[in-house]
Image (cartoon, rainbow, N blue to C red; front, side, top):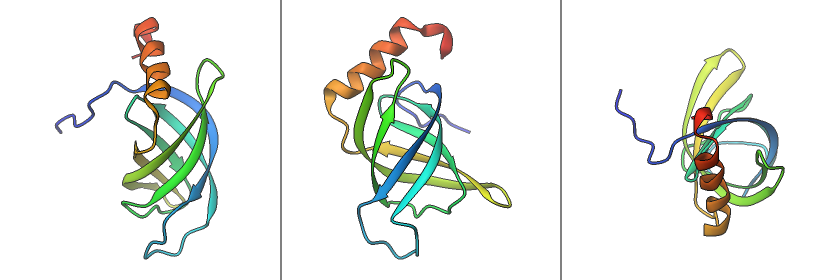
Length: 115
């Protein structure tokens, strides 16, 4: 399988809340909790008990390794079922300010052993 990510992902173990911003075809919760598994300057991976609609938009706040909180909008790009009640999803940032992405990229440069 070809690597499609443009940024290196680092592991991150936090739970966050997503708030749906758009109206999609699937019936989903307006607010939901997910467990973030990895993060990069361009997106994140997470696990959830809910099937996520590809292309849907969510507002979120993520506490990163430095305990700083970044605010962003994400777009769901994949959602794969990994067990009967668990999905592994991927999202790209569509509302991440440059200064917030810089925080992630600086952490990656200062901690290359975690990549």
